[in-house]
Image (cartoon, rainbow, N blue to C red):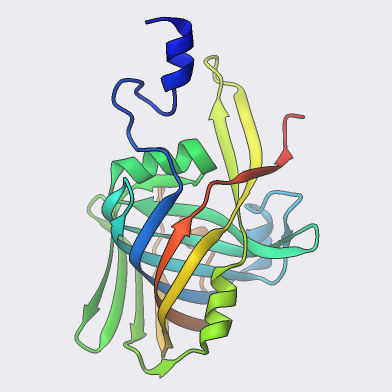
Length: 245
């Protein structure tokens, strides 16, 4: 195989059987439970990289159910998103993510820089409660609950929140272990069809774990919760800051 053919075919690992197809990626009936909570500002300052700015000492803990996604299949994801500002633009910094499917782990890390790790998240309806959990191996790390569809949320407000940009810290090492890529990446969701948005009473518990340290951003107060159902496209990203430049 000639070098030109390698360059033409190279997209993801491995070359002859890529872990995921080229994007962008469409999601149908993507379901969210997002619990926003107040946390310790000093703890946030330890994990949010400059030039991102902390807006308020808040964290959005997200459970996401994805039953139909291009190339990635059927999986569930969970993690922490921190509201931030970048050069006057409001958005969210994805601090931690845990999911149960290899293609979106590989694709998310390699393409955008999503901080994804393998674990066992769930999102389901338990009678009158929307229930999200995260287990890392046999250990329960997160439990989130919300009253099921107690009240509708204004459509435009929910849609506007989903359309905000998100920021990621993409790190890819060189073969000698030093960073070859260290970039701040911005991406946006597109072609959003919001099918429903609801709120209700909510609670969130985070438990310490050495390899899933979500409890390092402690829950001081639950501020709000929202349950969303939407079709959307996960667009590819752009580099907005290069830490190695």
